[in-house]
Image (tube, rainbow, N blue to C red; front, side, top):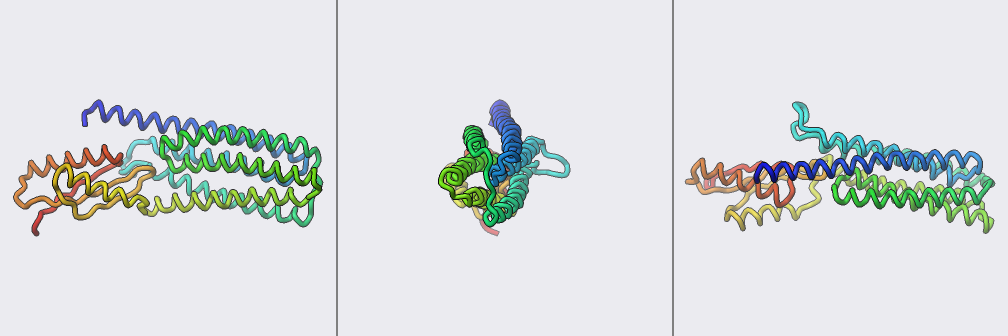
Length: 300
């Protein structure tokens, strides 16, 4: 690969990360404003659903901040302490964010359960419903914009942020339906049910995020097809067999250690050339972060 190609690839990666960081920063501001508005209005209306949705939005804003910080760390170059860079920091950020979400979900569920046995009268229900619809519409609009950037960047933490925003938007509409039923059909318990449903949304999303990020943090590879692809590329382009292939996820990418089998009579200069060519091709075609080729003799 030429220096120009490498520079272009690096600049493209940096641009994608910058877009992800910008999306996360906008998400922080938007969700914080929604949460503050909902909590302020809930003080006058007394709706547990609106309170739950406001707390949920504030929590999501904090999650977006953690995601923003994680992406900021990904952009940092390698250091003497972190030889492989800071790519796993954004995965760790997603994991921490999911834990925080679970704690807040439990808080919302507890208060909703209390309200189920001690129903509250919702004051200004029309204002409550307008607030929930407005919050849901803004959240969903932001969510799909973030989701587009998340798919492009393939960042686990940004995908979590997108799912979180979608959850936040849909939970607002669920809250609207609950308040509507409580107001116009006399089902006063529906306000508490709405809070519980929002808590359920939170738990499900957090479970998915914890599972995905934890697997990356413990170096689990959820892409067994990649090993087969590496073997196929090497055998088809170089007519060389492989013995062991070790993959390690680093954020949204992989590091690979590939052991190739060479004839005993292969010269040192030829071995060096093959190692460089195989490393470059595998890295480019499969978009790997770092590739190490280990040559082994055919007969030991």
